[in-house]
Length: 299
Image (cartoon, rainbow, N blue to C red; front, side, top):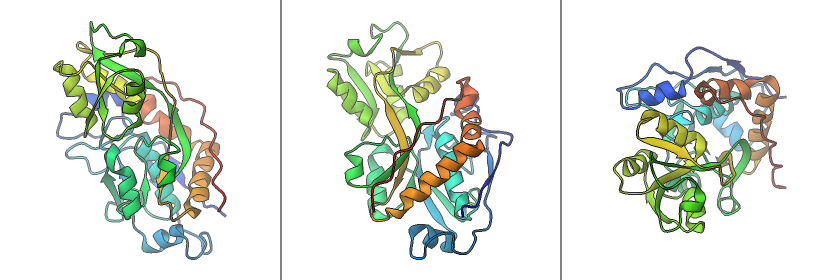
């Protein structure tokens, strides 16, 4: 029997625009929502499963992004990262009976797009929740399930740019983070892809005119545009569908049903909506309908 977690739509979740304005500050007061773990009943997790191992150890390492306000962000003096990805991670951690805010028990390890599969394959992390698009290619080497969010790819350009949509990208230099599917998508549209380690580096290249545009999920781009409203803008319609899911080690397929169960429960009891409203929802975006989860592969 699943033990429900108690999700307190607490106070100071991430205010997207406000947090963005604070990105260059020493830190912020945003601590995210308060998710409390409850005691794990005996027999909740099958003996020998990865979940039982983690619950017994009382420790877990979760790969998250540090440079995506609203999704996964950690300022220089922040104790914990914040954002929608992190809120979903907290629900999973709490379901294992581990306090998601105890940094001696939970290591929210910074990941970049290029090391998510290697981190899972090497055991560097137990889970990845880092704007992790679900793709058949990735599912050849790691486990992925969800999605817990569906978004779409757009473009960030300098104001006055002649790029107004994906149809204007032929021959243009467009950046994103290395290892992301976003670069593959714009290359297919005729653009010259440029990969950087972080989104902030990519944004800086657009600001100084080194590259013509930045591309990734629209929710991320709106945040960066809010930081430089006089210089940057998001243009064009969404031209891809990104299904954001949870990554887990492929050798632990039993984690799929557990992850789906926690997400389904959060949708039913309102925790999923509260997580959105306390993070991305603060940007003014309406809370969307939760996406339908994929079925787990047969064991």
